[in-house]
View 1 (cartoon, one colour):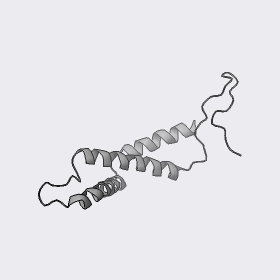
View 2 (cartoon, rainbow, N blue to C red):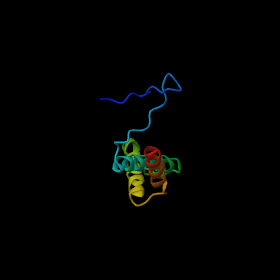
View 3 (cartoon, rainbow, N blue to C red):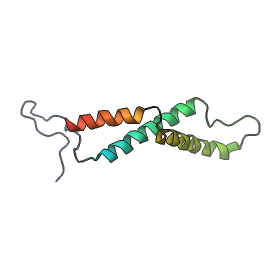
View 4 (tube, one colour):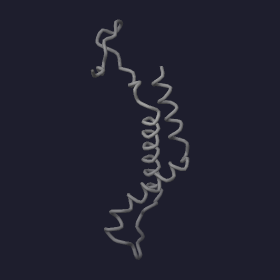
Length: 100
């Protein structure tokens, strides 16, 4: 049985926003929080110039195509080693929201 997105609420009539599904495990939340931090770090590293090709002796279009993959992998490794704490904080907030 599927949970409706907007269950009926006696005071609101049309329905209130459904709480997040309580069946999600802590592991699922942690994976999502770490994926978010990885993407955030990849964007920040990219804007900081990491992965930008050099003007002299650059790898050309091939290097440009794979530079974002390298930056994403570096961000993933940063997150796996503790990152900047964004994933942990996001995990705590999501877990608290689910438990209420």
